[in-house]
Length: 626
Image (tube, rainbow, N blue to C red; front, side, top):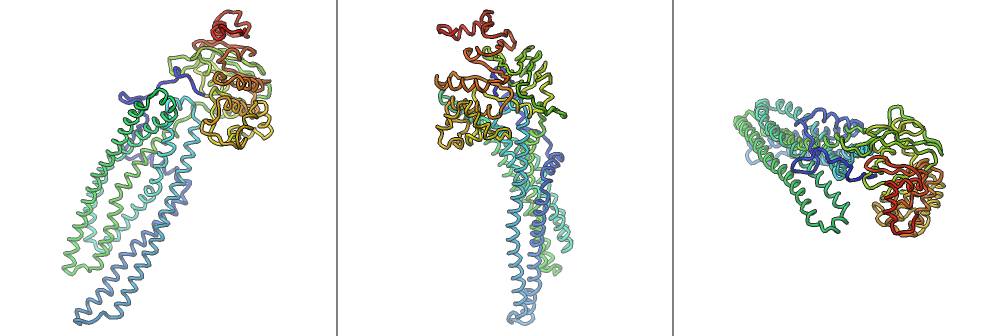
């Protein structure tokens, strides 16, 4: 249920040069151990998948170590043997045993490559499945949590920003759980193992590599300082872009009617330019990082080549051993060189996870108490009382002040007043979309805050001024997956709401598709279906936000009949926009500037000659209505 524009809070935290919430930028340290631990906890339920991925990487690592060892064995074995034979017997052919051994080593190398290719497939497939499983669970968790938050939280945040957090922000974690988290952990193991192997093979060359590696690590450390801020900026600007896009698409009719296409395009262009600038800044950062990284790697390789070449020339090092060492050095430098890229993935994921956890850390201010009353008001019961209720959307700007009234069981209370008088706010408070700033609301003497929230709302049948229909089928929109809605109650609801004719006209009947927001249905059809939806749940209490001004007379007559059936025998709070529809109400409340100024029946209020009488005269001046 929407609130009036004049009573909604302004967006908190707007910057001086931007009207978007500053909260899109979530600050933090370059390395946040708590954040890393939280991400690890999200992945913990899927530890078996991660263990399997780690196992695949371990086998691949073993195969990577086997390849250079096979080359060394072939070179220092049959190849060096054949060279020695040729030196001893000038011009002799290669001995058959050398050829046979060389063929065996070549076959072994080929077999190793084939097995490696198979495990590469397993690596990609298993890591991809692991990442998608984790983020699917996280996305569901965030979505469930968002639904528990109160309307005031949504009032302060663009819808597009929330969509970004549930979709692209979480999707951004996929790479971390695939090529980031597991691979980074295993890369550290690879580096340690390879250093041990290198020192075992040739300690002098290994020492040269070990002494120069801090340069490589240093370049990565320098780079990481700007990576996280750059990615945080990109995510924030994408969120703003999505928020504006969602707003424009939702109001495209208004944009076209008021010929605002050029201004809207210009604003979108400004946001797009900021997003482009943030992306270009990130690209330039990497454009500097990778050449610097390659330069250091090439320097280490050059030092290894020079030192190894000297030893080979002096006879202190065999060629096959040097080739094995050289290949192992490259395998050592690859994960070190990729640490920057891995860190980039982590920083991008951290920037997104900060925004995701910011949502998950938001505690709903409206929820069921620890020992909530799960009881449900009995039929024809449910005595509602507003006791000195006050409310403020923005502190210091009261929307309601000391409002007190009651709705006895089985009675209809209508609320009238000018726009902004606080009528819709009463409904928001009754359904606990918001909490009163002062006073309280009770059912049968029990404060609403003591009831289980879900059980409380299950007692209400709600029909809004512009009711929302979801994309799906008509039946899905009427049932809304409520256990209390049976085929019998649905049939009775369709009959009582006069929505049977609507169903009959639709191809497919109850299974007819409904477009987003019910765009393919008329205003009257949507309202009849909304009344049927409310009736199907057999509510004890009805909240009705009337609106029949935009329908034809025949449809209005159908809607009025449906409303009579909806209200029959039930307690009801009706927001009245047209006074002709509330004359039969048991009690009419007149709101003015957030205060309850008058109350009584239709005839009593007319006799008082106050606000209600003036509103009635204005609406029916020149007509025969009485």
